[in-house]
Amino acid sequence: MRIEHRADQPVRAGIPEHGRIPRYYAVKIELLDLLEELGEGSALPSERELAERFEVSRVTLRQAVTELMLEGRLMRRQGSRTVVAPPKLVQPLALASYTESVRKQGLEPGRSVIDIESRPADAQLAADLGVEPGDEVVHLERVLLADGERVGLESSYLPKRRFPELLGEFDPTGSLYAFLQEKLGVTFGEAEERIETVLATPREALLIGTNPATPMILLHRRSWTPEGEPIERVRSLFRGDRFSFITRLRD
Image (cartoon, rainbow, N blue to C red):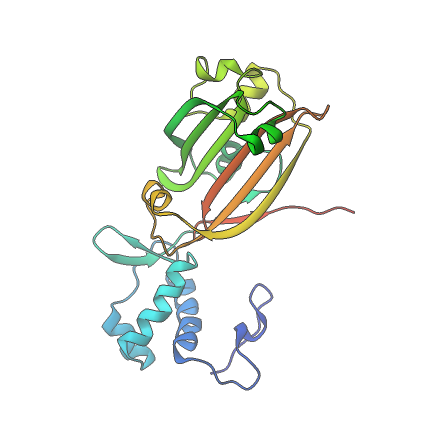
């Protein structure tokens, strides 16, 4: 199979120079070309039709299709149809809210509230938020939505003594950053973010509505005011098949 190099893809599409590759991977490369022809939202031809087209077994074809689904190139729709997935959402690694970044991409952000409560801080959380162990913190857990689709799960922790208004005045379905900045006058100075890949726990997979085998992107963030006072600690879990992240680096 002849592979044409594209700058946005791995060199030789990830095929080694000796050319010996699993048949399913060759089918996957051919399927990617087909997806570009079909376009977003188009239904994939039947399994039988594709197996005949690529001259492979259905088992081989399913392996290629499964990888494309895990990568977010294909998705299941109601009625078990497999369709070409929309482009991934792009989340900037910056001091910007989820609401702002989703709206910039022409989608409607939303949040489904799982819990908002006051709880005592353990030793690590207390150190991160600049409070004493046992001091009360506000915990806010929400499912993140984009045009009604569940795409992530976020847990935020903030010192209760600094932000008591969160339990009475804040609408937890809205933007936390907008409330802190516009209503409470909080200024964000800097943040530290750590990123890793994980699999969702059974609870997380159920809340997000995803397959437990789907790779997830986990972000841990701590943020401070310009004076160095801790504001929040956040744990955000995003669907790897629906999100990519971008940042601009400067020397």
